[in-house]
Length: 123
Image (cartoon, rainbow, N blue to C red; front, side, top):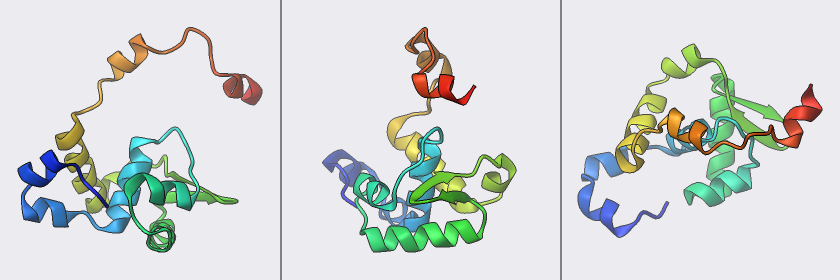
């Protein structure tokens, strides 16, 4: 996975080596918990070989940390299960450190007034 120059300069070697491919995959899916992705999309987004991502997804599925339907993958909505996985904690901490914690109120301020059409279809 490629990283920007500032991260390279400002992150310790231990921190850079800390995230395994499953941790990166789970971190990406958790950061995008409202979406499901194909393995190749995840691989493209995190800069890891698609084969490694597919293997990681299978392992995460066996631990009930991700859900799989057809060709799509999503993080589990079982928060207790996620909290019990130490890799998730490390990935979340590293992403928060790099990009800052998300501010849900800031998201709400910029949310559209109307629901997305796909939400209406589910009702």
